[in-house]
Length: 165
Image (tube, rainbow, N blue to C red; front, side, top):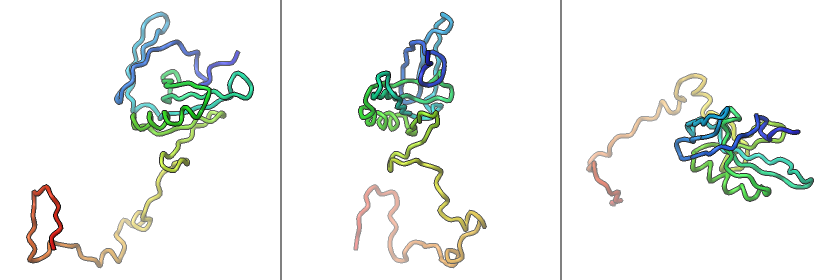
């Protein structure tokens, strides 16, 4: 008999209370009630997992909060159509300020960039010269910093920006 799709132990029915800051998971453990309070920031992200369904030619899609410990992952929605999860996937990630994740059938996890829909890695440094030498480029050293225009009044503490000629 195959195990659960996440590779962990058999899932016991749990009640989950979720808000923007924490997830409260209530489930029995060895016959005793157990309450776990997990901060939302501990979750790796909002993940989607699409696996072949029980009937050949069908798919089963699951949307869940991925935790490093699979027993603490929280299933948000399960459906037979992956298209139904697309909007919910982005909405949950935005509401909880978590990254989008895709769980591949081989068990690997890929992070998805929200804007382009492609894999997001670490951003490259903008100026490699400064990172290597620790100094400003030569042409920036020749430039002088600006100051207030002479003869023009400086208005501080105002709430409006008005262009005057």
